[in-house]
Length: 315
Image (cartoon, rainbow, N blue to C red; front, top):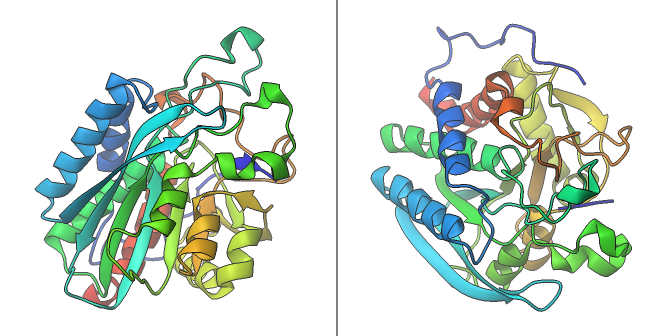
């Protein structure tokens, strides 16, 4: 995505006794480790292919209906990228649906790294890419074991992070559509004709240490009621120190294209603080985006909030 700290310390308001379905942060953490172990998941690499196969296999093992949407998209410099969106559907017969999504590829350039020598080195993407996928894989596991209140589609979008590098010094308006290529493709070619969902939730950089989530402006413009619903559920679940009642900046991210192209009201849960130098965490697009900076407490805050939404009728 392109750019346009409090920690989780309080005791959750919904304890293990009152929450029917518990999100396992250890499991989500493991899923991130598994992705990172393949190496940088950059399109056109063997690591990318291997990780994609792993994600498909895991989702199928959780009894989801899985569709692989394979495509070739063009990067900012004209490079053809062999990519695939991975779509998993639970209760596919239910017409009342929600969409959960994240990107699974990683940045080919550490172009925000303090050391210029690293700028053309691909990143591990433990947080930027891996964390959202890890949370959604754990939710997929829970969806295998428990019936949700609504049909759920999980999409891992590809080729999100191959946007124009910082060193080309282009302005945001000029480079915006070089990001989120898999999502742009999907909005033009949905996996099912006429696909609709009541709303969508994007997870992006949801595993960082001391991460906080503000009400992102694009989300508020298109789907303020979804933002308020999620933030209210987070507060009731005891995570108000993580989900802050303040506005964030406007981000060009996958949810923008789902809103504009697919007309599905969608929000972005993303660690973005306008007070930071570039808004994003210090590890963003650097070689420090590793497992060393992934927090199980943050994964729990995000994952349990979403589990409480999905399984609210299971209490």
